[in-house]
Every structure is written in C-alpha cells, then in structure tokens.
Image 1 (tube, one colour):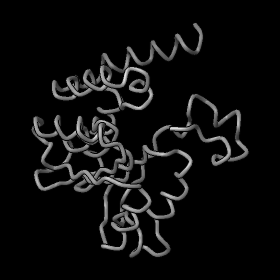
Image 2 (tube, helix red, strand yellow):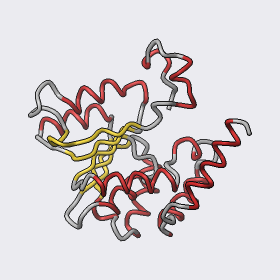
Image 3 (spheres, helix red, strand yellow):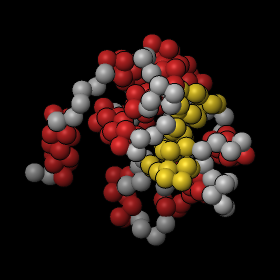
Length: 196
C-alpha cells in the first residue's frame, strides 16, 4: 500500500473508533464545503481533528481557549463543547463572510454562546489581549502559517505576566508538518511556510 492509501486507511480506522460528529458540526462542515468548495478541504478542521481538539481541551481541563484563525468556526465549536458552562473561546478572524457563517451556526449550537469572535489582524488582537492581561489554558494556532513565530512570541511574552498562557497552558499549532514539507525543507520554517 502506498503512503496515500495508508493515510486514507488510517483515517477510516480512526473515524471508526472516534466519537461521532455532532449534527451542528456536520451542518457547519457541509455549509462550508458548499460555500468554499476550493478551500474547505484544506482550511476546515474536519471531524477527526475536531474530536481530537475537544478531547485535548477536556484532558487539559481547559476553561479558556484562544483560537488564532477561525475560518467558519468548526474548531471553535469543538473547543466550546469541551469547556465548562462558564468557559470561553476567544477566536480571531479577518474574513467577514466566514465570520457570518460561523456566527449563524454558533447561534444554533448548544455551546455557541461560549464563543467570542474578534475581527481584525491576529497580531494586533493578540497584543491587545496580552495588554489587557488575558490568559488562556489553550492557544490554537491555525492562521497565517508564516506568522507562527510572531504568534508564539506574543503567546509566551517576554515575561510570564506579559504572555497569553496560563501557567500550565498549552499551545497547539496546526499544519506544522504540512504534507511532509518540513522534512524536505528542514532549513527553516519562515522561508518554506505554505501560504494559507
């Protein structure tokens, strides 16, 4: 079997033994695929990744999540599912059309009220959150890949007081392996980071 066949087989196996996708997430995924047929597959967190994100947030007993790059809100809803009733997801986005689709589905979701959407450039919004003293148990990076190191610097801060993480906080970064390109280009992320 080729590596592609093995990848597809692994995904089918993982799906078989994972929690089912909730109906609101399936509806959001389907709407995203209809509205964004060319980009949905690479930009949308799918059912397996979504269940993993929820499980990680539960294992970490997260109460607060910062998501850098929301797209249509699939992963934000997955995180919101995992949080306690007073938990919150602050999610950052620049695309108003994607935001509108997300907010529409958040309004229909059981846990959608836990999500706070912030529009604008991520670096600016993150700097404002840090300045305000906001702290997060989980920070999920899924935006402009070429800015991951800048995001990281803001998350960590020069001192613990300046950063965005709680003392036991965790950073999750999407696409760091990007189809194996990290192995082919191990001389630096910035130079070879894919465009979003």
